[in-house]
Image 1 (cartoon, rainbow, N blue to C red):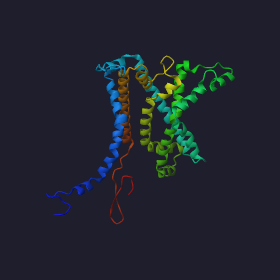
Image 2: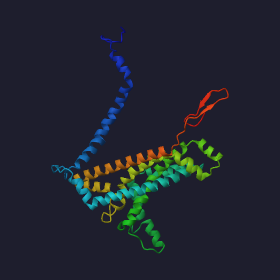
Image 3: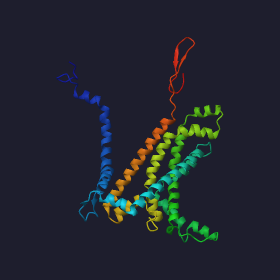
Image 4: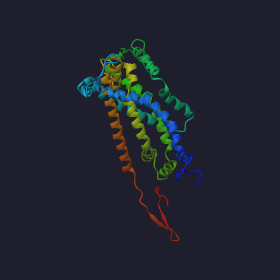
Length: 332
C-alpha cells in the first residue's frame, strides 16, 4: 500500500486537496467578491423588488402587504405609463444616434491620421467626466438670461428661448447630452471591432475589384456583428435608464412632461416616500430590460446563423492519389 493512501485504500487528505487545488483557489478569490456583491448590490436589489408588494412610506410606518395592487396602479396611472413609454422611445432614439455617430467616429479614428491618440482622448473625455459637472456646463449654455446660446440669438436679432418651459427643447437637449456622453465609449468599442477584422479579407476584396463601399458592406459590417450585438445591448440598457441628465437639465419639467421611469422611481422613493410604487416600478423596468435583451440576443443569433454559409467538405485527389479534405476555412 502506498504511503499517501489511507487505511481503506483511499487517497490521503493532502492528495485530495492537491486534486482540487484550482477549485480552492477560485473559491478563495470568488467568495469574498460574491459576499461583497450580495451585501452592497444583491440584497438591496431584491429588497427593492420585494417592496413592490407592500404599501410603505418609510421607517415611521409598518409595511402593509397588498399583493399586486402597486403593479395594477402602475398600468392604470398615466403618470407611470407615460414615463415608461417616454423611457422606451427616448432610449431607442439615443441608442440609434449614439451607435451611428460612434461608428462614424470609429471610421475616422481608424484612418491613418497624425495624433490619433489625441483625437481618441477627445472623444472619450465626456464618458469619464462626472455627469453633474457636464450637465452644469450645459445649463450655463442654456441659461435664459445670460446663456451662450441665447446671447447668440440676441446678437442675431432673435428672441431668447426659455428652454425649461418647452417640452420639445427639453427632450432635444436631453438627447443631445446623452449622445454626446455616450458616443465616445461606443466609438472605442467600434474601433476595437474594426481593427479585429482580418486584413486578408480586405486584400481578397481588392483583388476581386471591390471599392470602399463594397468592402464596408461585405467585409467590415459582417465582421462587426458580434461587436454590434454587444454595443446595442449595453447601449440600450444604459439609454433606457436615462436619469441624471433629466434631473439636472429639466428636473422632469415642464409639468412632468420630460419625466422618464427612472426619474419617477427616484421621485417616488426619495421625494414622495411612496416606496411600494418605487419597488413595483423598478421590478417592471427590470423585466422589460431583460425581455428586450433576450429578444434582441435571440434575433441576433438567428441572424448570424442565416448569414453564415456552411462550407461542405470537398475531397480533392492529389497527384499521387492521396485525398485532401477542405477544412472549415475552405483551405485544402
